[in-house]
Length: 145
Image (cartoon, rainbow, N blue to C red):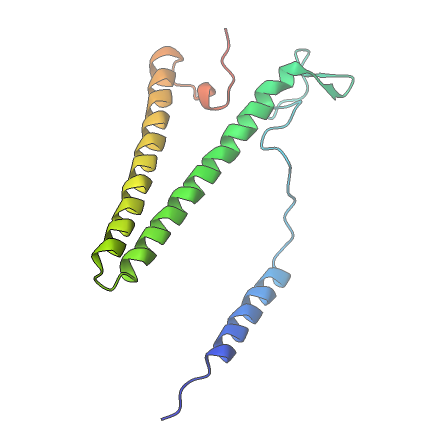
């Protein structure tokens, strides 16, 4: 019985991915999640953070909001990678207790990180609901006085 050629399968999968990327529509990518002048989709207002097209310290709110949004994506990516690494270590332990313990520690730290992430979100959500009327402005860093 002849073994299948694995390299042909890899090449065809890579070609399929490349073809799908070539046929997909280009997507415009922005450096920021929220724009300077119109954070809520409205036109520039008199209290805009730009003066003659130059960002001022008032734009720090927008930059901080963008950094927090990006850090959320990074945190979730790291948690996913930790679960994948823990799963891989568990599967490749072959019953060796020290490797199983290493995988358990990876899972433990991933779960602790997930609990911290979810609890911080719930704390901010509770503050938003109780003190800010549930508008969700705390997550956009737009808290009116």
